Image: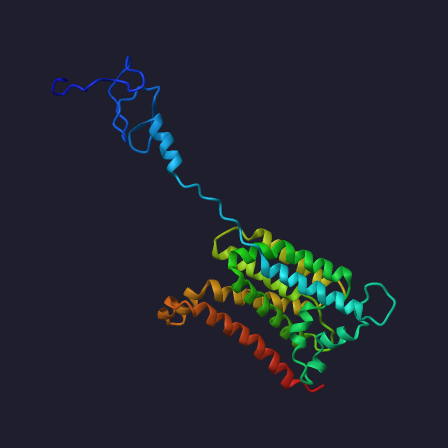
Length: 290
């Protein structure tokens, strides 16, 4: 028997000839340095460590959700382009502009003013040629999946759709005599959303800013590109993403802090931004005198 104040010494449960003053915190058996393993609290014996490892449920790593919205958008664009090329009236390979379908879907203010409002949407899925759709779909495939995972499918689709409408609206105001087509307006909206997301998460936005500056420079320098459409998509992408991410600040700034607690608040604000793009389209149609 150990005297008061003296640490009791035992023989190791696996090596009885080895004296030790340490017991396993799980089973209480004496363990020598060779048989003990460090635990978050105290020491455990080898057998308890092995049993504990077996009892731990093996959790499979979460698989990143597939970017279904992005790939669906790419599929629709490709299918529409194939349909347009397939109905082309010329012998030129991959010609799109001579197709009656292209004429029925392209954005052109005089035709929209006649009541063909669907063009403000369908033009975002049209492309003038193979290079045009190739660049746009490559851009969408590169930036789309990451943003879809970051925002979630519903928010991502909302941003894309609002940017598409905003692109059409601004193009109608500032390029009324031009045929406008392409997904680039909506893609600019995604770039704007990425910038908002980077700022919200306090990440370095340098890469996004450089990409935007380069693309804007190309939009200005290259002929046949709707700068107004691109800037409209960028503007409404920023506004839509801002509504979905900064709704706390928007509500407090408007003196309505109670709205922050409602789950529908960001969707209401995003709907307001979308409604603004629709209002601009309607206003342009009503004021058109050509």
